Image 1 (cartoon, rainbow, N blue to C red):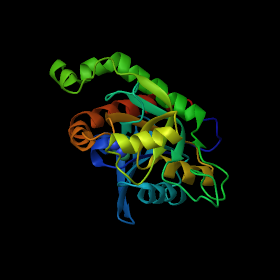
Image 2: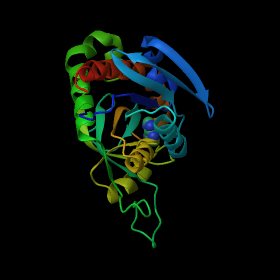
Image 3: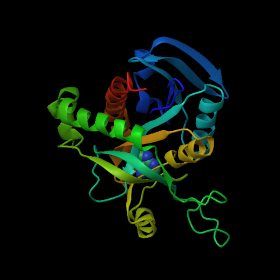
Image 4: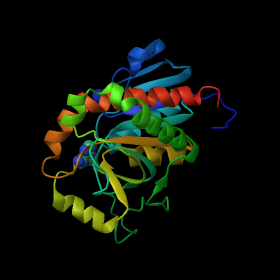
Length: 260
Ligand code: ADE
């Protein structure tokens, strides 16, 4: 966060619901459509930002991140969205901020160890600590101070938003929507410290690592990556995820103003 270059923040989500309200909140928005995606540049609570929807999956996310850096000259990237729980202590409604990310479907054995991205020497990509700290503080403040005013009692009860918690640790990304206990169990066996599963973060991590761009990933837990995952996911994304993302990104921008 101490770079001499003026901060320009790229904000990526896979789906519109995971980023609802951000483009509308921008001052002086300017939309440019490139390679089938809308990139909107403008000012978000004092921060020069570019918002974009990547769509789902690792290739879509990697392409979006690379374009944000190469064409829109962002200096930092935050990915915000939802994830399936990867641990019994991580509940629906909790937030996970990545300390590192793994492409859980990368497997070039016997040429390279399982999960290692060939010729990078890495299986886990560490996120930027300073940016992740800002994001984690923003998320914690949102959960502690604002959640009860953002959701009414009926909504909180329906979605089990009962004292949601913030976690920091390993997020796994793959081109699979994990929707069975067996699938998740196999991943957990190989990655015991896995906290959440999603489909984009580790691809953005690889792009940012290779381009030397600090990045952070935040995920609201929408489902338990089990047989009910698809139903829980749709309900949660529509009603809850957008409000989490909006308030956390707002708090992040407010924190970042003056610290860059
Ligand atoms: N995103 C949200 N829930 C997910 C799941 N169960 N698997 C993969 N990505 C997800």
